[in-house]
Length: 113
View 1: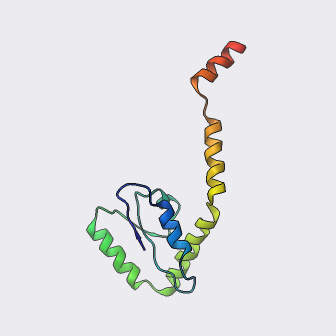
View 2 (view 1 turned 180 degrees about the vertical axis):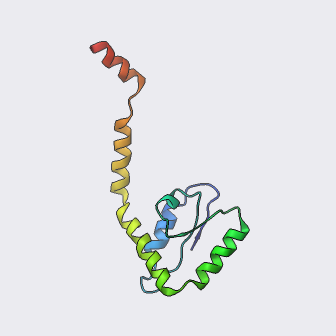
View 3 (view 1 turned 45 degrees about the vertical axis):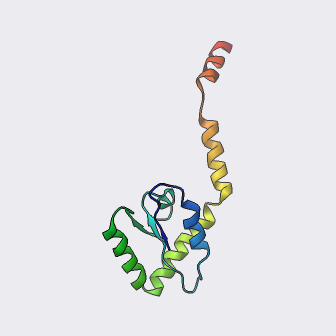
């Protein structure tokens, strides 16, 4: 599977591709290094989508990759998919929101002291 957005937005597609694979004969994920999912999905073949050479090299590597390596990479990627579900994302997002103090709140608390 080749997921190479020139702009971010294909993160779910990459995870769906991994989840849809046959565990006994998985494909290889080729992922743009600019996709947000690249940070988590390090076992994909990460490429610069602007580089024809990197893309062609990754496709060649994927086509010739031994089954054992494909399975090992898929298992690691599948663990990422399992570990980073919507609940984890939600909790991290809410935590980040709660950690932010806006200027009006700071002023309100300063006046109450």
